[in-house]
Length: 261
Image (cartoon, rainbow, N blue to C red):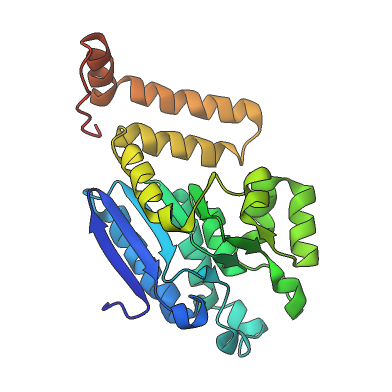
């Protein structure tokens, strides 16, 4: 599909999806979701891509929620259908894909925009970023994982407050409660994110994949089952070529040459 609402780029082992509707603060409509989902699938299937970055065009917004004109036409039947499901498929892919996904949050991340950021592996924000789930003010509630991922990240009490009041928080507060991993100046955001992503890209891909899977899957298990699951993945890695190379490189005091095997 030719992309009209996003920009998809690759460089140095990184794939970058830019939501490109700055005139509406990168609000999401069906076409944007379809394009972003295809691009994310491409990044997942591309062995040359080690890390995926998501960001928004311009300096005002990462994603300022759903397209209001489209939201006006939604009803119970549309939200139980395939088009609505695509939003969940995209968020689930970002969360479970074998490669880290980083949200470079350059402004407003609200509604579905915050929900997609929550699905990413890491969130890095500019100083002017704002975060919130304001759906309650429209007579609805988060519908793309916000009521599930937000409390898992910041705790039930803070999630209840954000979702039930619909109020926005700023970047320092988002960092304080653990919603974002880092806050940097607006002008430095993409350079910082790319440098961080390249550090992740240099790590052994198989170990990154399984560690990410252990955390994600283990959070949905009790502690004993999670530890058993972790041990199985650890055992797999202990038989990998990358483990042999990593140990040899450490003992020989040289940089490792990981192959993802």
